[in-house]
Length: 249
Ligand SMILES: [Zn+2]
Image (cartoon, rainbow, N blue to C red; front, side):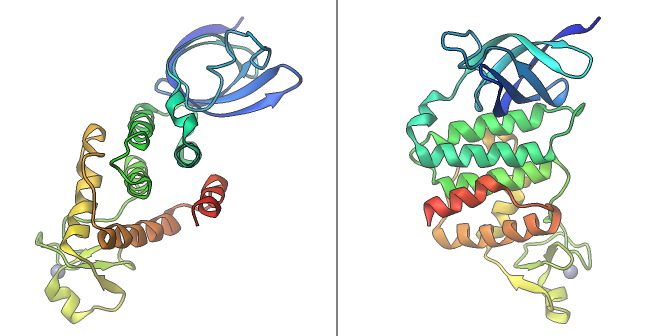
């Protein structure tokens, strides 16, 4: 006999099965990324219809069968339905979920990634924050949570902790002025604001991430570094990012 579990999480993907059902992917605090069957979720009037869509955050009662989970009940706390009026924001949201799904595995603790998705969706709803900035903060923080990020607190060559103006892509971190003077191959000069922003995103709590804006040139520089970080660590392209890029350019 299977068991029933209650988990807290967010639906990050869904696909139709048969005429009336769905298979959903839930990123959960307790069990990491799991896939579950939502029976009847596409039948009009079904109690699980709204909550078995991506963006839905709440509690899910799951029955563990022989080979998969079945959703028995759900208590959704936030559907982020305001985002559905904003096509671009929705596309960013799908990209964030795909990227989080790339890192998430079964049986990991999904707490931090869920919190990051949640706060990022809230940030997408704020007019004052550019979506491109939210994207960059999300990407670097997601990678940081999963242990893949540059060293931005000491020189990669001499270990000194100073103010930094050079980023070395080969060594994947900052190098100080003296070391850059001696072997600046592979290092690029960055602004102080970019250096500070990298340090801030990597160390700030998730609740404090979306509290600043950047000048355009700083955002561009930050984006170039993060693109290279993604290239370095992530071995596949996200389909939702390609769709998004086609939409915004
Ligand atoms: Zn140095």
